[in-house]
Amino acid sequence: MSDTAPAKNRKIAPHAPPASNFIRQAIDADLAQGRFAARAWGGKPGPAAAHAGAPADPAKIRTRFPPEPNGYLHIGHAKSICLNFGLARDYGGACHLRFDDTNPEKEEQEYVDSIIGAVQWLGFDWGANLYYASDYFDFMYRAAQCLIETGHAYVDSLPAAEMRALRGTLTEPGRNSPYRERSVEENLQLLRGMRDGAYAEGAHVLRAKIDMASPNINLRDPAIYRIRKAAHHRSGDKWCIYPMYTYAHPIEDALENITHSLCTLEFEDQRPFYDWLLERLAAAGLLQRPPPQQIEFARLNLTYVVLSKRKLIQLVEENHVTGWDDPRLPTLVGARRRGYTPEGFRIFAERIGVSKSDSWIEYAILEDCMRENLNEFAERRIAVLDPVRLVVDNYPADQEEACHAPNHPQQPELGKRALPFSKELWIEREDFVEIPPKGYFRLFPGNSVRLRYGFVVKCTGCDKDAQGKVIAVHCEYDADTKSGSPGADKVKVKGNIHWVSARHAYAAEVRLYDRLFKTAHPGKSSPPPQGEGRDRGGVDEERGWLDDLSPDSMKIITAQLEPALKNARPEERFQFERHGYFIADRVDSRPGAPVFNRAVTLRDSWVKQKE
Image 1 (cartoon, rainbow, N blue to C red):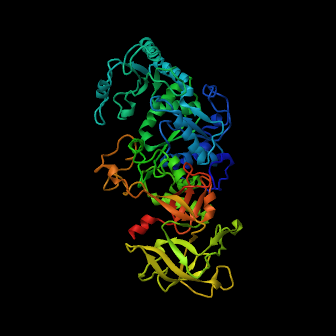
Image 2 (image 1 turned 45 degrees about the vertical axis):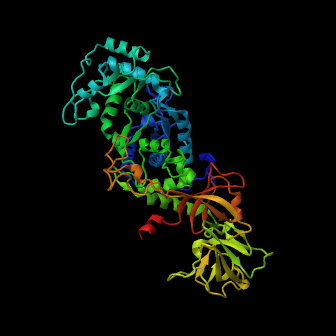
Image 3 (image 1 turned 90 degrees about the horizontal axis):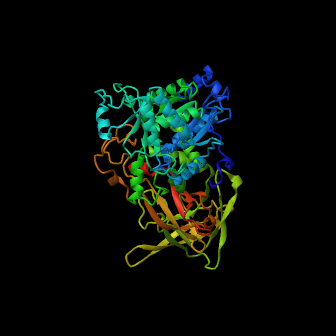
């Protein structure tokens, strides 16, 4: 099964009725009160609706997923994507995909394309609602002029260090800039000069004029425009000034008639500025009321990974991984290449839900969600990952026959496939020992087992090389015990092992992926404070977080696979019986020569290690 088809053409399994949460309760209350009725249903258009980018389609609610195109999306973004698009789906609304491209020095079209592909891969469609912050640069500039004209903004010419010094601390109020009382005319003239490239970077910034003594440090005259003489990937060299994210974001929400702006908890302290700005622009007639409602929820904190953009960049640039799509990275392109499924991510998002308080989610929950989904559709195949030769001494050397195995034991409608049987087979090395421990029911001299879907065989011995390593196991088969034949059950055995015919097997590269880090909280001896993953810093590591990289996160082997796997298409997924779920690599597979990546084992191998 491939995920290369467009999202709109790919069947998405019905989702269970969603559990209620504080966000749904807020939306229910707003709908009951008709808070956004005029805006959401295309009522009388206000100034925002007249804007060229304003959506025209009716929707009960309107959410948005607003990534910055300065990197690749990761698993944490999947939670936000599923939340925003899921709410729009459940309430008969619309969800916008909007790129907050306000920082030209870090943004590239490559990231835009990767984000679009990731959201589509997760199974969501924004229809005509694709927007960019850069679409609104002209409006944002006019809004900045309006703030100056109404006494709510000024151009500050302090050096950055002095500006920080006057900002105060969490316990001490800030102090006004000496440039705070510039005239409207002077401020407008300076702003035009900033726009036209007349000043060097850092010479001036435009600040909102709010309250330097506010206990909320985010209201102490925050910067809303800065000089950046950098070409933008969409607008080119048109602008020499760019809006700050905290200024641009609420304007974008309002212009697009967003009803519920869902943010992670680090934006909670920014909500007063969000509301302040939209109220001032509405009072000036530039935006309509009511403003979008910002609601904060806890971001995803996941064990055994790092979601900090800074750390992900370091992993890639220092070659600790092979690139942004390395299957060990928590990026969505990496997860896709590893074999994780969009449906598994949607199950995961529903299972962990949303809350107002930070908590740590065990990585095993994500793996279980993937197993749950993969088990439903992944056809079964046989692969021997650590092969040793099994010689059936009493089977004719020039003979072969077909054994038959179901493609999916719970879906008989998928039929069966033929497995060629011959004199020499490949079996797992761990399926033979000379001296068996207690409770070992597989091959050892004198013991009988069933070759899965084949015959009962009795072990007669083994061959070793000069170093004493077993290089071949010998057995004899009972011709009357073939699976599916009348005599199949005449011999009772306790062991059942899998195999492939050595003559027909396909030798393939198989990559056994595991968790990138060997500890639940990389760089920490105990769980860090909630929200450590935020790019705002967090607490210092007690040891280098890179020291916790697992040396066993990837093992490349040559495995022996049943011949049907030779024709696997890129991104086709299978369960390798006994081993786990695997996908044909979308990058390195070639026609007739697929390379396989392990997505997840059949059970939580980390629990097994603890046991």
